[in-house]
Image 1: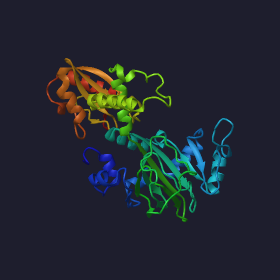
Image 2: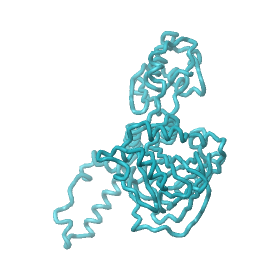
Image 3: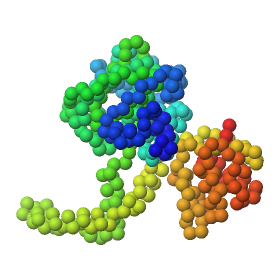
Image 4: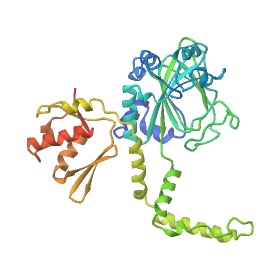
Amino acid sequence: MSERFPTLAGLIAPHSLQHFLEHHWEREHLHVVGRPDEARASLVSLEAVDAMLTTRVNRHPDVSVVNATNPVEPEDYTDGEDLVDPIRVARLFAAGGTIIINNLDQYSPRVRALVSQLEAELRVHAQANLYLTRGGAQGFAAHYDSHDVILVQVIGQKQWRLYDSPKGLPMRGERFDPAATKPGERTAELLLQPGGVLYIPRGLMHDAVAVDDGPSMHVTIGLHAFRWSEVLLEALAAQALVDPDLRAGLPLGALRSDASVDALREAMRARVDRLLEAMRWDDVSPRLLAQFDRDHKEHLPGLMIDAVTPITAETVFVRRGGVHAEVALDGEALVLTVDGRSTRWPAAVAPMLTAALTHEGPFRMADLGDDLDDPGKLTLLRRLLGEGAVSIAR
């Protein structure tokens, strides 16, 4: 299992990935005790965050400020065009506000690589946000999220309080309504320290306070998995394209109070039964995968440098991490799809193409076999560089 999802396994180590998937995912929180010397603790630095906030032109909501005890409005730190004023942000932070950098993966190459690798391995959309809080302050009151989150503490300490899950598993985009949902009984309290990780399933209510001995900074990685309800809707849409009866309108007067409820219920059940008989996973998965590929966050450092670098028999290559690459046979040709972009290749290169895409660790041209001569191998590798499937080791 860890071989399939190595990035997720690394985030929750030393806990077993198998145990996490069977007992925690969408069910129960998981706390990974960290150490300051772990790589997770250096995911992003305070200096890098300072540069993001003070040397870039930022807009709301890419950067925002929240305060659980003294509500903050966007106009408190932006101009009339949503431009963020770093001076006012700093003042609000000093007064107990929490600074949020949304879509941190757009600004930090290291965070981008982590998010891209998670997406490529799990085939789910991921997003990273950063939260910077003064000691003793609290950004949000108790709430739940509509997606699963993995928190990585990088600076300082934060006390997390977990409550019950009144909503179960919220739908995608189902916003938390504080007036309608109050936290129930507290179920856990834990301290997250640098290098520590906390998984919180969607729907689980939580809040947190920075420990009063300095600032706290953590990265939240949101995992937006497809729901079974979305799969079933896709199956219904696919079947409706080939079944005219699913496209037929309701009988005239069906919504009248004197309509035959029994007849309508039977007609609906008959269509559901036919849909269940006809639906196939293979009809739905390509549509979901295409949707994933459209939004996948690619991480392609060095792509332009690779394009102008001469390659020889001694050039060392590596399979590029964080890309979704697949090879399929279409008639007498191969189709290579990398992050949704498809190209056609001669079937004769299948063994070498597969070797390049599955090779563990660095490799040279000679490691790909002898199905092509040296000029042919160089052409294949140059094309793979251009598609972003491999890169030159540096």
